[in-house]
Each structure stands twice: as C-alpha cells, then as structure tokens.
Amino acid sequence: MKWLGLTFVFAAFLLLSGREAVADIWIGGHGDIGAGYDSGILEVGFHFEEAAIGLAGPIPSGEAPSIDHIIGITTAPTTRLSGTQWDFLGVNAGENFFLLPETEAVGLPFLGFGLEELIADDWDGNLTWTFNSVLSPSGSAFSIYSVDGAGDPTVLASTTETGNNSFEQLAGT
Image (tube, rainbow, N blue to C red):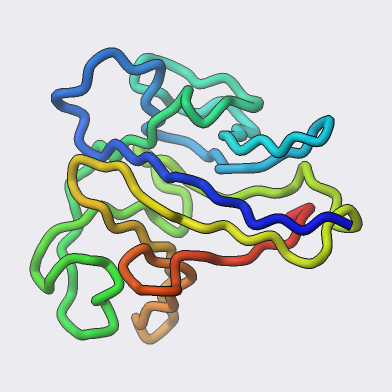
C-alpha cells in the first residue's frame, strides 16, 4: 500500500490583460485537476472528459500537463458578503473576489478534482490535496467551499486559514 499527500501549486490567472504568450487559457467547460500514477511516478495535471473552451480555441479532451493551461475567469468579480463566516475568502466585506461556481455555468471553467485514474486498493487511505501557494495577479487567496440551504458556507480548504489548506479525497473518485 502506498500513502501520498498530493501537493499542488494552484496557478490561477484571473485577469487576462498583461500576459505574454500562453499555451492556453481555460475559460469554459468542465475539467479536473487530477492525478495519475504511472510506472512509479505520480503525475498531477488537467483532465478534460470532453473538449473545453480555451481562449485560443477548443481544448481537446484528455490529459494535459499542469503547465499547459491557466485557469482564466473572464466574468466580473463577485462582492464579498458581510459576516465573519466569509473571512476565509481573504477579502474584506464589500470587496471583490473571483468565483468559480459549484455547478456548471456557461462562460466559466467548471473545476473539479479527480483521482479516478487511481485504484483505491493501491493506496493506504485517502489522498490529501494541499494548496501551498496560489499564483494570481489579483491576490494569493484560494478557497474551496459550498453553501448550504441557509446560505452559510462550509469550507473544504482555504489558503487563508492556518491548517485548513488541505482536503482529502478517496482514490478512484
């Protein structure tokens, strides 16, 4: 059995202006940050089940190294609500931040995290995604959360909360 903590430096390019030549900026459709294990090497990159939308044209389905794509958000930012429950976002109430939706929306990347290429029996428990840093011209905060029926957030991981920059996922999911 193998144990592994997945560490991924999440590079998000949120403002498209001022960028030199880029292989591709992913701006729409579904894709995963995923991991595969081949010949003793763990590879972290992008996985697109179907063609996605790139700034330069279609992104073909299949696997792509993480350096081949930058996640781009071309819509207007969202304004942070008041209340301390939103502090994990890394901006003050009334300030703007960029948001990828929890469900697929036209014109935005629909980002997931996938370990479906890994066999659960080959690993000793869950694998851990850890976000050590974020590269973005608009800030260094990155959070994954959902909102319940009452409108309150449940934080899965956030780079702004000490000790809460990781989440676990079962291999094969």
